[in-house]
Length: 224
Image (cartoon, rainbow, N blue to C red; front, side, top):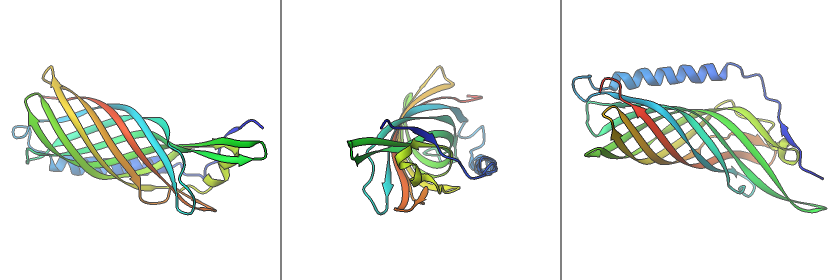
């Protein structure tokens, strides 16, 4: 029997994006409060990001899924602080995560899949080291996520009937930035995200996501 992709019905959670947006606004206010004066450390960087996500689903009482490759895109703000080596980063993104399942039926082994689209807001302090037009940085922080779309093949759909309204995740990243044309910069970044609270409470146990992301960021420094 051919696999049938399905979109699961979601609980009524229209206010979740608003709550997450308010959270981001609070974090942005805190970040700008910590920012250095314009005549001291300089400016902030704002821009867009696009990248690839390699994720898998982690089951508390079953084997983890195979990894799948998806996409992440969004926007970021990076603010300097009075400490030249410390930056505060804020990010809003849409990331698709999920997993691929191998099941056995009377017809033989079959492949199943699940994908979840997350609206994610993250706060990540970073340690920077500048050398000429280049900079190296490492960052660690947390993210608050809410799913905005769930889809799967029919056979595994019951696993995703009870999504959590919000998911808490820990993140870590490392990257290289190059500055050009005075105001512009490009970054190549690799990062890990590990959901530490359950994303779904399935009959077989809790389900979380772990992902590795490879991201390109392009930003501009207003007033630089």
